[in-house]
Length: 223
Image (cartoon, helix red, strand yellow):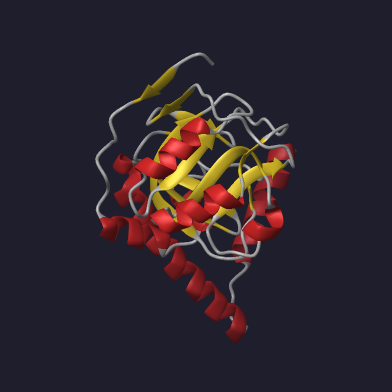
């Protein structure tokens, strides 16, 4: 990478929308979007506890340098999720305890890093959500280049500036502005349906006929 640029920030979503999405399980949002736009298990939560939800402040970096992460934290608005594309490089950490502490002070909602972090003992004892691919003790340079407010790829999902990132212990999902209503409606339905299913399990009245019907259909298809 030889390009250094900071593009204009996108429009921020309505905080009420962010709060509504953050109230749902990532699994429900993923199912509502037909299991698309989710990160694979390679990005795992490194923090102590707590879910993640907020608009993406995207950063693309060359492996081993975190200058533009430093700048992104300074540019961040409270509630932003800093989403970092390092191409999956695990050789050198790009976020550690100092960056995470400053981000907390700035009101950053969390980090999603397709690369390595360090100072895990500190990060894992705090509640700032940080999802990363791995860990390295090696520290970064701070000379650039880098890009901010550009489309990035993390954990197999494409994230555009201003997309809403939702994360919990199961993983991450990206919600594009045009998909918000569909995601919320579908997640609401799934939460209601699962509540009814759990109630039926507890009462011993769960109807499992659909399993036999689906198996019979699969067996007939093989024949």
